[in-house]
Length: 170
Image (cartoon, rainbow, N blue to C red; front, side, top):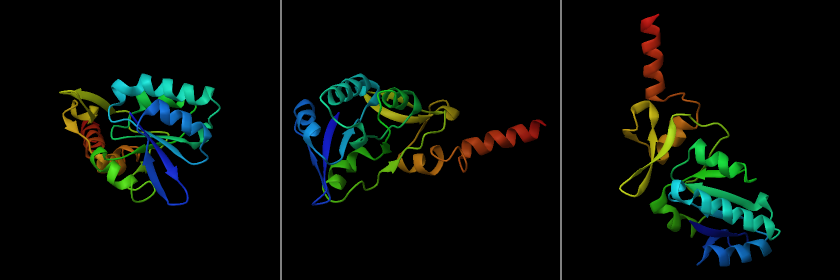
């Protein structure tokens, strides 16, 4: 888990060297704060604890957002229950480069409803976004999320195939 501060004057982001030290500064900040979770399966409890500490110290949850390459309703709902309302999907390998140059680039806001088949699985210690409609065999990238998973399945080849099969049966 990483913590970034949005700098309004320069329109850039600064990475905190340490999450807990960053939380201390975040409470006093009036800018945006972004938690990045590369592996939400392993980091969800730590993220919830960090949010709790932030809130207890008087931090404003409206300033707080969470980004991950693996958006999925199961872990996102746990964070929503903590009071965080903004989530973003992003590519992890480009995040540091992007955040150092412009505000929220290549990051797409995760809508309240995402495809229920979208979930996170671990493969060799790495969190992957996978499609349950493909028996977890289809790994989904950032562009898949925005094209299919965040659109209630419209345009998703798996949802369309399932609809065609239902039509053939009827």
